[in-house]
Structures are given as C-alpha cells and as structure tokens.
Length: 177
Image (cartoon, rainbow, N blue to C red; front, side, top):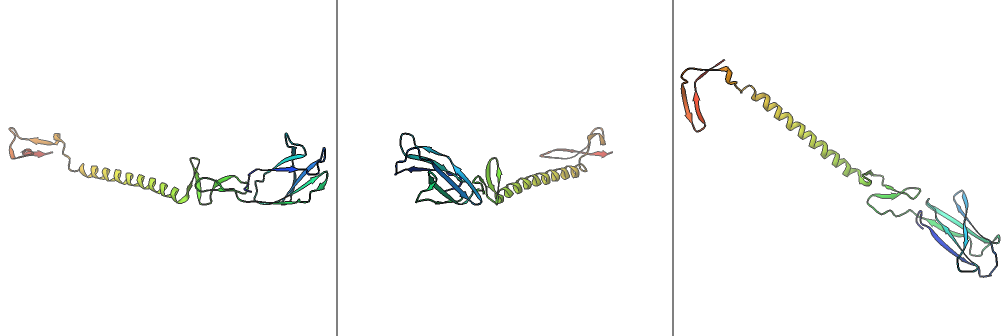
C-alpha cells in the first residue's frame, strides 16, 4: 500500500458469535496502536476497520476476536513510497508530496534548479546588456558634445559670405568665438 492510502478491511465472523469484540493492533517500528472496529451496517457478525500509514516501512496487524487471535493473523502490510503526480514531486518521509532534491518551489510548482538558474542568468544578462547599451549611449553623447557648436558662439560677416552650396544646404563663412 502507498503512504497515506487508506485500506478498508471487512471481517466476517464465521462462528456467528453474538456481541463479539473484535480488536486490531497495528505494530509499526516501535509504535503500537489500536484501530477502531465498527459493525458493518446491514450485516450480522461482520466488522469493518480501516488502516492507513504515512511513513514507509512494514506494519503488522494483529486481529483478535474476544481476546483470541484469529488463525490468519498477524497480517504483514508493506507501506511503500507514495506516487506523486506532477513534475519533480516526490513523497517525503510522512507521505506529503514535495519538490525533489534538485528542484525548488516557484509559484506553487516545482522547477528544476537548472531551469531556475537559466532564467536568473537570462534576466541578469538582459539587465547587463541594457546597462552596457545605456553606458555606450552616454559615452556617445559625451563625445558628441565636443562637436556641437552653439549658434551664439558664431560671428557672421554682414552680408554673410557663401563659401559652398550642396544638396544639404548652404555653407556660410563664420568666425568661432
């Protein structure tokens, strides 16, 4: 049986004992506990009990009627690891589904560490490239400041002397500063 899975047992008293007392003891490791046994509704001399265990290992069930162990008892039940549905989920020692060793929880889902590292590296790389691009724009603007001439620093003769003409406009002679 898997961790946390509940098993239903149905016991029929073939000796038809009235008011029989059925007891079930579970031994798991150093722990011993008793299970609740109920009369099966609508049936006489029939009893039900449920078994569930969250830890992996072997459980021993001892069944007794009126204090006498039944011939088929004890029963050995092996509790195996729970099968968790979903990517990168495994059962822990208590049967709860958790992310596997090489993954982490992101938005309620398990993501492999490699995928997570790739996303972080991509985001960091994007911001690094963005910072580099902004630095290069800044450097270009700084170097262009040397070549920008303010019109107030130019002194034209009257009338302005044309020294060239082309598709981009007219070139005038001026004195700088």
